[in-house]
Image (cartoon, rainbow, N blue to C red; front, side, top):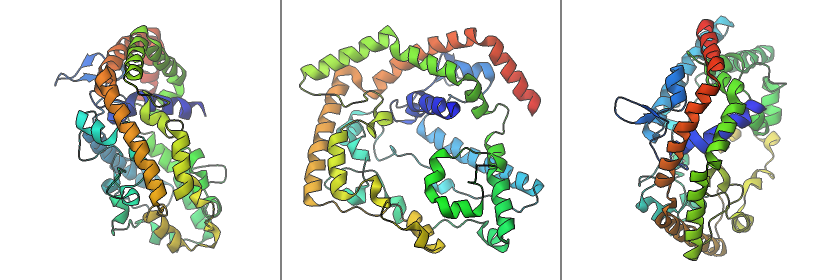
Length: 376
């Protein structure tokens, strides 16, 4: 799926990084807002906010607002299809992993969380107060989400439920039926592409976000590759690498795309050893989903994944690894490789490359914008 892969790369390297993963704040390109903050030149040209204000507070507010709008659009679509649909309010669940008691990118954050790799791998309740984990307190919330449409769905017969899910999710090669939800469970989530009323709602607006990436995914991928390969950026990373090495430390694999690559490569061997002791992603393998009732399934996923048992051995290994990560991250920041400093250079370069992108693709951008406006 070209659109999904291109979109994921752009978000992980560019937009999402501005939410506090690689880049702390101040995302955008060479166009200036009224407040003096930079915003994307592509956004300015199209009149969109695809790559605009990416500070974490704004992301949460925008996401909640978009979610409300999408739910209302789904309700209208389902009514046209002959079904009732009550919009859900999930705003309380909106949040980002790297939020916490400290501002991301500051020396204080780095001194506590390092790169945010091993310190954000396990829940705080799992590792205990002497180690660092992500905030998993939300799983302890007694306020269990109740789908306002559940009672209505259960009032339908089997054929009605199948038709309801097909209208809501569209044709998903067997995914959009009541039976497939029961048979496939969570295994189909990774291959899910929105369609039906949900897809219509996600694609609504003056310019379709997904349609944009479908048409310009290759060009955007090339744009990011060019920024990463820019001599100024490469030279900066080389200087940081040399400085960190001279200080006696080794940067983790995947740096500086820390969060994007950390789950796959950074400290992989050590983390696999720890997960072998406490139970890693394969902890679901021994669960018999078919034998579980609907109430048991809902309860399990509302409570989060099964708690892992951190033995003294596992805690000792994790403590050693976290100390290694944090000390390396502190040294990296001192060598000029902190997220704020890299952000400034990356965005400075990105501004120039976005201008080139617009000049190269002006006719296609004008046509895309006109077609999207005409379709509304």
